[in-house]
Image (tube, rainbow, N blue to C red; front, top):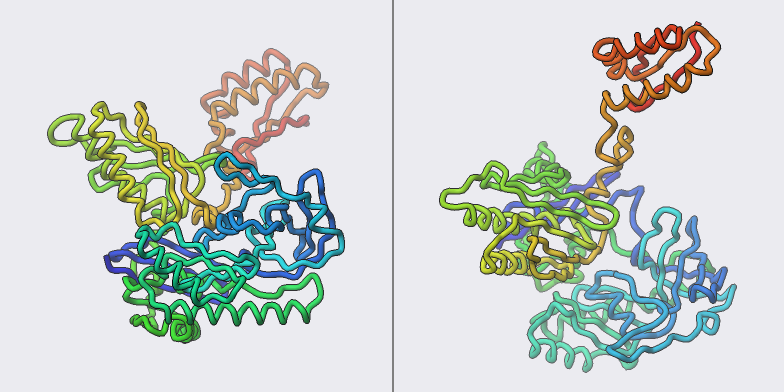
Length: 506
C-alpha cells in the first residue's frame, strides 16, 4: 500500500491529508483562530477545591477555569498509561481505580491540593460549551518513538505492538538507557527500532523537560509554559512511517519547516518531500476536495449500486446498509452478502476518514445464514485492523446489528467543517406547508372568538401564503363567514417557513 501526505496551508487554515493508494484515508484540520490547546502545559493556580466532587478548579489563564480530578493529581501509573494510550490523549478515570477485583481508593482531593497552590498541569481535553478544559498533573511529552512521563517511574509498551519478543526487547532497551526514576511509554512507531533511535528520542525529550522546568521556575501563575506542536509537525511525528513515501506541501515556509523537523527527529528515514508550485490548488489537483465533500454527506453510494446511510447523533452514530439499485445475479442471499461485504470496506473507510468516535451501531441487511454473518463480521475486523483508533466490536446479532465503539481522539470532520442548519435548527426537517396551514386555522379559530376588530391579517411565509390563497382558500372563506371577520393573507419573504403572526387588520 502506497501512502502519501498532502499538505495545504494558508494563513487561516492548515489541512493535512493522508492518502492510501491515491485516496484520502485521514484528514487533519487546524484553524489559526481555533487552534487547540490539548497537550499544552501551563503553570496554574488552584482557585477552588471541591471535596464533594473530588476535583478542583485551576486558573491556567483561559477564559474558564480548568477542571482537575483527584485521579489526575494522584500518582497512579495505570491512570497515566490509560491517559497516554500510545500518545493519544484520552481521559483517565476519576475517584477510584479498579484492577480486577481489587479497588484502590484514592486519597481525598483536599489532602493533595489547597487553594492558592501553584501546580504544573497539562490540558487533556479542550473546553467545550460552558465547561472549562480538563487538565492533568501527569505530564506526558510525546516524541517520535517514546512518550516521556517525568512524574512516573514506569516503562510501558504500546498495546498495538503484538509481538511479545519485540515488546520484551524494547522494554529491556528502555530500562537500560532511561534515567533512574523516569517513565516512558514505547510507541507503536518504535517497533523494530534500534537502541540509537530510542536514545536520540529520549535525549531530546529529557532536554525538553529540563527546558520546561526552567520556564516554570521563571514564570508566575497562571502562564503558558509549553505549546504542543502544530498540526503539520504533529502529523509528521505521529503518522510518518517507512511506508509513507512522499510528502507534498504547497507552502515554501512549511516545506522548509518539515525538512528541518525530519532532519532533527527522523534523520535515518528518507522521504521525497516536494514543494507544490502549480496554479491549481493542491487538494483539487489530488482530487481531495471531491472526497471531502463526499465524506460530509449522509448517503454514500457503493460501486454495486447499494448504499450506506450515516447518521451522527448526540448519543451514537447509526450506519444503515441498503441494497439500493443492486439486484444481484443469482439469489437474494448472495445479493445481501455481497452488499454487506462491500459496505464493510466503505464503513471502515468512512469511520476513519470522518473520524467518527464513540458508540456506533451498524444495521447490516439481515442475513439468514450464520456462515454469512460470520463472514461479514470477520471482514469488518479485518477492515478495521489498520485503524489507529482503538475499536471494540461485538458480533452481529440475529437482527443484523453490530455494536462497536471507536476511540474518540479528535472532533469528527463533520462537526469541524459544518454547523447546525440555521433554518431547521439542526433537526434535518421542518413542518410541511399543509401542517402549518391547519395550525394557522386552529389559531385563527381561537383568536377570532375574542377579536373586536372587523378584520385580521395573517402574516406568513410566501410558500404558505400560496396554499392559503389557492388550495385552502375555501377554509379562509368558511372562517370569514363563521366569525364575520375579513381575513387578509400577507406574504412576508423574510419569515421562516414555520413562522406566522395573526394581527388585527384595518
